[in-house]
Image (tube, rainbow, N blue to C red; front, side):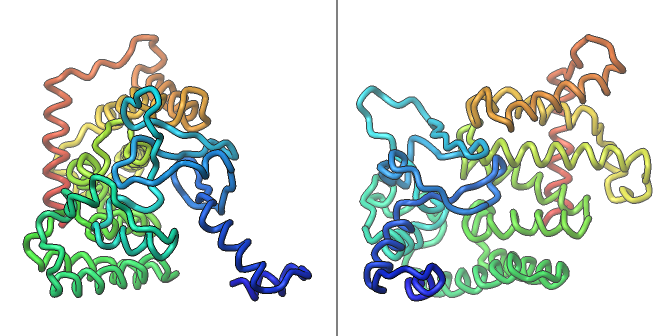
Length: 328
């Protein structure tokens, strides 16, 4: 990389000096992402770069356009160190350790790593070589699913990876790379415009995966997933009127799309100030959509739509069935 940077920039610095500069940039930079965590590039912020890593962080980094924000995940005491995650903490312990050493040149000794196991990995012994082999194959298929431009090839790779993880028998849906395979499958199904299959996969993420991997109801990633599910619900509600035959697989469930979308948006609205910040663009977008849906549901009446506890529980119970029966 250093050689390429030197040649491209035309700098007079020797390759060793360029390598040192590039290394410092890579170690101290953060991934610049959208409000929905789509990667855009890198961000170099000297003060933020001083935050240390923990696999059990008390804060998370988010971006509002070019503005870097640090959002707390739990109450942080006075003089307590603010800790973020440098890597995906939903990965298994040995994978986190390998990535931290390869990218940041240190071995993590946080509470999670000292324990040697997490909820995501407790079902499989960390020294189970046969499982690691399956896990490696599944990760390769995951990368194929991400990188391949042909949607059918990518879907086949992701489904094959999920089948490998299912064959283990004791692997919970929230364990990696099972969870990320499902998330990527949902994204690719949206690209393929297979709305019902994407909806079912996203429901399994909503019910089974996010509450474990992102236990805080206001975690930014969890809020983004709920937002995406709500927007897909809106699209399916539109199709139920314009193209009802396209939703034949959902007919038997008798879903009330209006109440489902409203319930999801209420969850987003009640947490978005903590997840993204009151004045963040994403928070404003969410509140705007809530007001729009409110008008659509009440036909312009100022009254707030009422979702009774009984109605909500009934619809959410049906949604769990959809997730279980249509998303293996």
